[in-house]
Image (tube, rainbow, N blue to C red; front, side):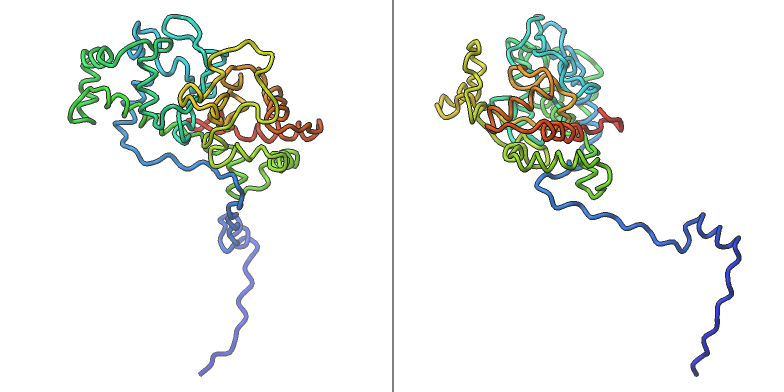
Length: 328
């Protein structure tokens, strides 16, 4: 037997108010879908062994990695200020400036090569070279291992993670493991890519469109917005003409001795670019505005309108992410 339809009693105003306050019966807001864009948001930090990460963090701040106990990784890669330092050239163990501008350590694990000239493939190899560099830490791996082994706290920490204790390879692995956690997610642009399209202003959105239309995205691409290819510095004009000659300007040529690699460098990531001045391998651009001018002149061969340039710079400032839950 079919029961007749009956009208439900009208809820009281008090009951309606309670339902609204608790969200009962209210439609849940739709979760926005990620945007289909050529640039991608940063991935989450990969699952890594916590003890290895902590050991790597301690080593990152350990000055005994340098020959005279004067420098740690953190001396030049300052996490509170963009992952580099504010100097054109960092100071080595002897107090003298090195020959290349220090790249940020943030998101370095996403780069396809390490160093400006891309001479090594892995973070471990990069760490190995920095420690023995005669202008950076100036040490050797036997001395580093001996110094760390002499410290009971490191003996215990290494034994917890590595069966063979303190070795050069294990120091490099622990440091690289920690560096793989140094991602800076949750930039406003990442939130935009994930579907929060209201988080950018109209000028920032226009800046992103101009970034694509002018061709910046041809080199600054992927989830790291760079760091995944080599490019000649001075595609459309000779950037080095009239500048004092410097061996470091040869770039990847110093690695391959191939004439095609003269003045070729790894394309840097643009993530956090607003907080990593000065710019380029030779620190020749002191401001973001100046760096954008150089890119238009020598890489793109184009002259943007003042409005387009301003909007692109506004977009670049949305690429600043977070570290330890705080904006850089």
